[in-house]
Image (cartoon, rainbow, N blue to C red):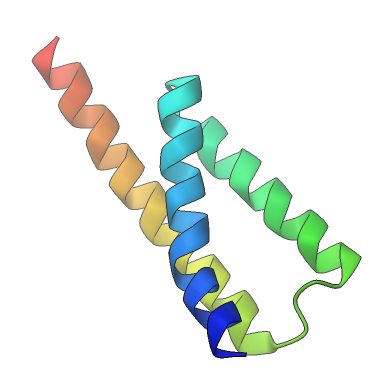
Length: 77
């Protein structure tokens, strides 16, 4: 149970960053991560409400950080 909470805090954030770096677009990275989360909820891998809330918060923080990262990259070039 604690492991799921820790993964819910870090994994969506890292996935948004990974997909943003691969696709060069923070919107696409966020949508791909959200799609993975929705599929995992549908398949039943998340059975606690607080894990879903932590996933969504981590997704939002990942989006904000990826947007900031994309702005810095555009500013340099």
